[in-house]
Amino acid sequence: MVKSRVEEELIALQARGNNHREVLEDSYNAETLHHIAVMEWNADTEVIITDQKKNIIISSSKLDKEEKEILSKKIEPVPRNGKILENRWKSEKYISTVSPYTVNGQQKGYVFMFKSTDQVQSLISRLSHHFLVAAVITVTLLILTILFLTKSITTPLIRMKKATEKLSRGDFSVHLTDMGEDELGELSRSITILARDLKHLKEERSEFLSSISHELRTPLTYIKGYADVARQKNIEDKDRERYLDIIYEESEKLSDMIKDLFNLAKIDQNTFIIHREKVQLCSYLRGICEKMMPAFKEKGMKLEIDCSENIYVMIDPMRFKQVFLNLFDNAIKYSDPYTKINIFVKREKGDVLIEIRDEGHGIPREDLSFIFERFYRVDKSRSRDFGGTGLGLSIVKELVEAHQGRIEVKSEVGKGSTFLIWIEEMTE
Ligand SMILES: Nc1ncnc2c1ncn2[C@@H]1O[C@H](COP(=O)(O)OP(=O)(O)O)[C@@H](O)[C@H]1O
Ligand SMILES: [Mg+2]
Image 1 (cartoon, rainbow, N blue to C red):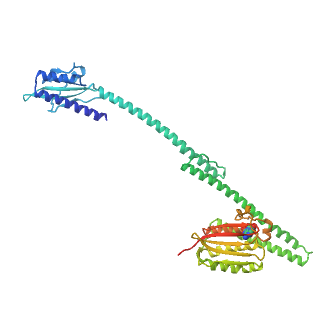
Image 2 (image 1 turned 135 degrees about the vertical axis):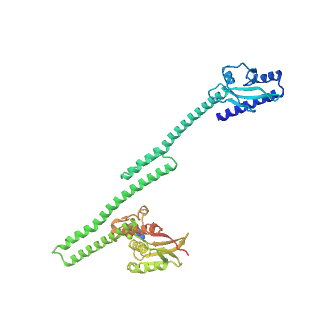
Image 3 (image 1 turned 120 degrees about the vertical axis):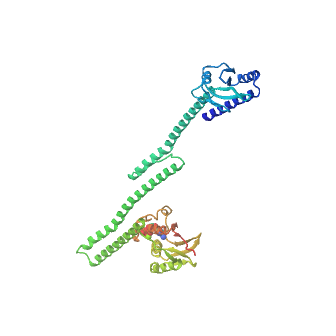
């Protein structure tokens, strides 16, 4: 900026000198000389007109030391359009140009132009001052921004890092509050949710383990007790047979439970594979009901299927059979004799809805949200008498969800229960 400003000044000074030269060459006389000097009196430039030997003919002001120095320099050769004598605005008091003038075809002398560098220098110092102020402001803003960013990004990140380290050590008491509404806030909320889920999982696992050991212990106690009695020599054969029957039944229950647990574990680990195939739902359902018929008949119960539509679904027939067997088994177990079970199959918003409705005992409202949990039984002692483990519905739910389906239950005590399953219908 300064350089181009100085260049402009030099060009202007040179032009002014050349201008005076033109006037001088037009009419070279005392009046013109005086005129030129007068013109420069009030301007911030100065003019000195000399003869060929650089003797001063006229000047617009008294010469000072620096001007004399410039004047005394050797200047030849000077081209017609003049030349710059001094351009070191930084160190010198003046910048200066010279233009030669001719009268009657003969070079008569020179027009020297001077301009003080004060102006440029004050401009520079003003500019430097501005730049300094701008720099200070920029640096301050930069520091403030860095501080702000550190506080708003780094600090939360460090907190989250500490939280995740805590999580990995197994300490789930993580609290990340007041982290704002931005992406970091979202991340912190995700971490909090993760911590809560992990905590829940851990609790669930230990609960599950204690339930298993509890559930295994009961039949084992029976088996051990009755085996002890059956071993005695002084009992009647009839009694021994009865005891052995009980032992057999309890072992059966145990093996059922272990089978269920094994199934659940497989579903949990995602190691079990679903082999889906196109299944015509109604005939498939009828086939399963057919197999269940003896169990229904035994209790004098009726089974009605309302499924006339030609509906196809993509399911694993073996796995889904388990779903229906479990639900039918419950419907029979938790209903009075001579009641009815209805199955409805209908289309609903692109899905297929399968309803299994019984007229059984129903499930109390406060238990409804838990019945899909492992080992959950509404009436522990009675359900055990029926041979229940409390695992059936949790397996049902896992299986339905493994098919991207959904299961819900509606129930009213004394009136009956309805289990609703939605799965995607296969079109085309
Ligand atoms: N159709 C039903 N009618 C009434 N209660 C039911 C029905 N199905 C399930 N339940 C209740 O839900 C509990 C859990 O069912 P489930 O997981 O199949 O275990 P269980 O081995 O006891 O059958 C049962 O113990 C029972 O109390
Ligand atoms: Mg059951």
